[in-house]
Image 1 (cartoon, rainbow, N blue to C red):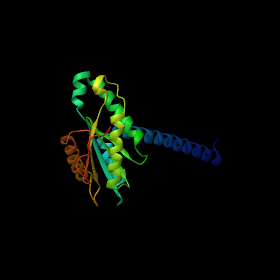
Image 2 (cartoon, rainbow, N blue to C red; image 1 turned 60 degrees about the horizontal axis):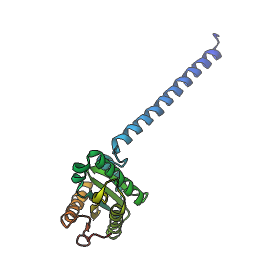
Image 3 (cartoon, one colour; image 1 turned 90 degrees about the vertical axis):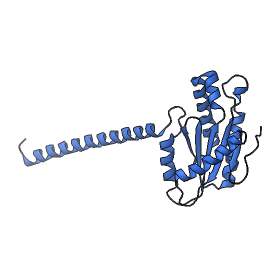
Image 4 (cartoon, helix red, strand yellow; image 1 turned 180 degrees about the horizontal axis):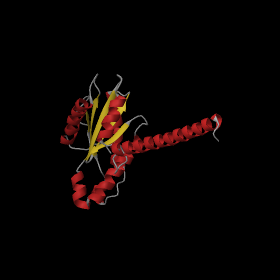
Length: 205
């Protein structure tokens, strides 16, 4: 018991046990931190990225120079849905729109709900013509989707703005340009897509 060998063995076992406990503790802490980060960056209603998560993911996706385009969309007359059917119905519409976008998007696209009824999609490695075509596909997917609302409000529409990422442009600049195009689509009659390529698109069914 008092031999050098036994004491060395006991010390090694104690060090091994301590190291193992610290490793398990560190792994648990990393898992907890990752879970907190995921919850911090996700919109709990739709499961999409929230504004903070979207901006962080955008910064990561644009860390190296590459083409890309931002699509902003806003649900048309969303306040009327809330006022007529209540906020539970409005929340259901938001969840459904999020699901439609997720289903229609590419795996590499970033999708977020920036707040209220505004959603965003950043498409890496995509130029403006392709992004505008994808925005039209999103718009038609929402227009044709059967939402859980009675009467004419069962057909929900959204307006879209599309802008291409400029070299060395940060999120705020790209967002501002895209938001102005979104406003142009709404001013032009809603259920439209506006980009730098052309005037607001006429509604299609």
